[in-house]
Length: 551
Image: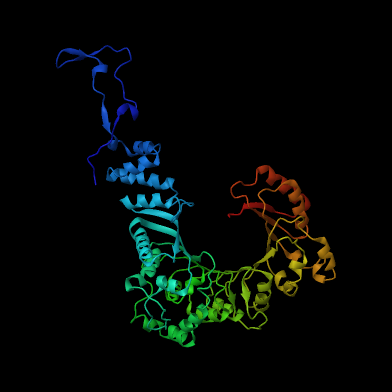
């Protein structure tokens, strides 16, 4: 692609040209003709810009505007390799930790234009793709193919991918996007509408390209309400993963794989973390691909959230089909499980070390008595009180011998104050189990800025409870406190009020204060004042940390 257009610049504009002699030097003699020729009469020496060393070219390119960088990339192969990386880096496209490409935003048009003329593959840290299912099928088909080309032709490596579904209005529109061939082993629901065969597999091919890019983290999310398209998903899951289908899936899976095409054709699978944050993940036209990726990847972290459209009886059908041998971190939120199904799943994954149950996680059989095997390597547990109590009732010291750290998730509703009864009362029955922990964390978040951190009147009314005395109660076991407050600064009056909360935990060792100051973090003076106030009131503190929450 070497072009005949060569950029030539005067040598004086690039580097200092060595002068012969001093400024007062006499005119030099031209021996060939016997004449004296002054320096001013000599032609200005010129040098090809493309022939300069790479270091000098990069230095000059670093001072050029973006439009010039793009224009220079069209001159030659060498300039393409040198100018486009600078152009893309100015658009936050690259392998730096904060680099990312959000498709269809103000930046993406310029990035895609540059990638269209690039002669090399580049690396990208993070890709966010909003998939609008309301687009006409023809336009959506071209978009999916363009995305596939971006992943296969332009990117050499990709670390994190988020596919965000938009505008799923009804099941027919969603079928236009997610329709896949009928499985020969697991019966599928035949959609009421269809599209040409060449569009049916476009999304699956795109997902395979995402996996083949070597990405280590994949998130499937949904923007907006998932209703009404997911209202009947329990019925389709019952057909896909019902008793007969599940038995066929489990018993004939090795044999069936020899006679039918796999739902996924990904070859370069380096996936380590997957976030299934939408019921779309288990839609009948995508469920088979999801299950195969879960079972065939070296996943160590699995997060399931925003699955309120899927009932507990459906999870009882899905979970037995999932086997992730290397799973060490399991996070569940905004979904409903049966306690027995969760323990069966954890039992089948003995390498799980950390289990996180979010504030919106629910058990449907919380009062059920179970007998479980040892949860071999489970060492860290995080859950709200309503999920922690039934879990600890079943997970005894015998079944969880390595469990040493528990985090209690507690949220104070809007315009309410924290009371000690919010912590002590629901966990009173679990006090002996909590007392055996090496570390007991409390993650406390406030829905609004309280006028006072502690409501003394409410605690005085419940003082008759033995769990709320000064010598007993779960609060006396707390060693780590994480406070999420919706403020951008921490002035002296607010820090003073915060100590009223801290003194209620006599064994507190570490405090983390999470604010909203991501853009404008707390000043050193504010931190110093807050630390002095806290340590004066709580001398047993070992550390105080301030963290800015990312909005």
